[in-house]
Length: 175
Image (cartoon, rainbow, N blue to C red):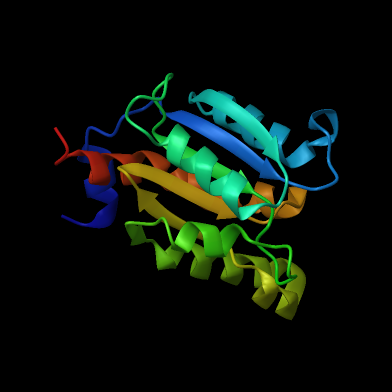
């Protein structure tokens, strides 16, 4: 069975519960265009936003929030987490380092495809993105740059197209 038939025939969960995190030292919730776009786009696609947090670029804050949200006791249950911000190359950008230490499995293809699509829009500056995705404690985690253009690109061209399929694949043997 090819990948198209496989995706059509699986019983992928149609409505996922997704927690949204924005990392920023300067934004306020009312100014979080990227976080708000993620929430709106998830809702439009039929998914539920299980929570939202805007936190500073701090490794301990991010790690403790991920561990909490992806924990079995967290309510409402969360199937996935989408993080925006903190993926660049400056010293303050800690998202990739934090997540790579948490991932049970890293989905290298996500970052590769994101950078390839970004290259088509912004050229060689795409090499500075450290977008990533992985699985932690049975949950899907996506991490993208915080700009609205990057978030729009990731949501519309990758995340919404694959999140249900990913959830199906990682959860089919957990029961």
